Image (tube, rainbow, N blue to C red; front, side, top):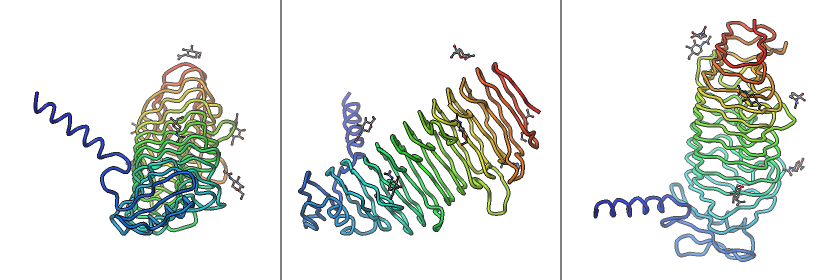
Amino acid sequence: MRSFVLAAVLAIASVANAQCGSGTPDARVTGSGSSFTATRGSSTVYSGSDYRAAIQAAVDSIGAGQRVSVIASGSIGANTITIGSGKIFEGCGTINVGNRSGRGAIESVNTNDVSIPYLTMTGNPYFGLRFYGTRNLNLGRITMNLSGGLGIRFDRDNPANYNVRMDVITVSGAGSHAVETWNIDGLNINQVIARNVGESGLLLQATRNAWVGLVDGQNVGTGTGYATFRMANNNGQNPNGNYNTNIYVDRVVSRGGGRGIFCVSQSGAVVITQVDLSGNGNNSILIENCYNVSIRGGRVNGGGEVRVAARSEFPNNRDVWITLQVDNTSVRESPCGQNINWTLSGNGGRNLC
Ligand SMILES: *[C@@H]1O[C@H](CO)[C@@H](O)[C@H](O)[C@H]1NC(C)=O
Ligand SMILES: *[C@@H]1O[C@H](CO)[C@@H](O)[C@H](O)[C@H]1NC(C)=O
Ligand SMILES: *[C@@H]1O[C@H](CO)[C@@H](O)[C@H](O)[C@H]1NC(C)=O
Ligand SMILES: *[C@@H]1O[C@H](CO)[C@@H](O)[C@H](O)[C@H]1NC(C)=O
Ligand SMILES: *[C@@H]1O[C@H](CO)[C@@H](O)[C@H](O)[C@H]1NC(C)=O
Ligand SMILES: *[C@@H]1O[C@H](CO)[C@@H](O)[C@H](O)[C@H]1NC(C)=O
């Protein structure tokens, strides 16, 4: 009994420890309205009405391996907070952001070992979080309730990223994608949850050696060809040009929206273990000029047809292996790909090679 109580107390303590701002952060931002204070230890590094300046002053006051906790809620406007190497940034309050064209509301670029264990963001950023040139970036529990813009973006035309981890990323109301990657080698994502998002839930591009636990989308990309889970622009292709599997996705769930799963433009090298797609407004699944793509099980119920298609500008699909229950919608392979094998159950039309 006693050890049970002790264990319970310790369990509660460890949960509390794992909360945003817990323990003794090296720097903190507190206040509200038009009065904010940034402290580092016992010294005040900012005091005034500018929430953004308070946050940046706190971030700038700490060194590598140290932690800043933003306890206060407020608005940074159409501005950018920059996080340097080795710093731990916790957004415990709600950080409201504006639209700074081409830029992130929070950025970390050309850095090592940055960690954002917690963040809650609202507003309409151009990019909520923007990264490039990172090594060992860690994103924890990130919640973005947006009214437009793009959630998390890794740049296309900038240095690559190595070893990126994300725990649970929840994005609603983005006008564009919830999470868009370019140029990541080594990506580990627990969950991407996208609700009422204009374009994709998770969009991977030129990204390899990835594992994703779950992509879950509702009303993602409605009226567009985007998808809850989209792979594009040579995603998964290895540096030597081959498509040996290096993208592993445990589960994709999609309801309504545009497409469920879309692989396009010479992507592939992917195994998706389980799917649960229903009522997608565009193709439930579209595989277009992709190589070494396998869907190993799960179900499509209703929605647009499951399609293997090809554009003429890239080589045709090859090495596609799909095991799936498809009800209340059709499956079509056109044109015929190379080495496409199907193990289908369920009702609906079938037009296979
Ligand atoms: C974000 O949205 C979720 C789900 O609607 C809600 O539970 C949460 O309170 C919202 N948070 C903020 C800060 O808007
Ligand atoms: C941000 O501003 C640009 C113009 O600078 C505009 O094109 C874009 O739609 C705006 N995005 C949001 C989310 O408001
Ligand atoms: C499906 O996606 C294609 C390609 O983006 C687009 O042209 C078409 O309008 C979409 N269809 C629907 C029903 O949204
Ligand atoms: C597909 O990936 C698997 C696993 O890495 C590999 O064994 C196989 O050779 C690949 N097939 C092709 C045709 O690339
Ligand atoms: C489908 O293709 C894969 C890989 O090419 C192969 O391992 C599998 O046995 C094939 N399945 C069927 C039913 O032909
Ligand atoms: C097909 O859709 C109808 C209507 O949504 C549903 O009642 C039925 O259960 C579905 N069929 C299967 C096999 O799931």
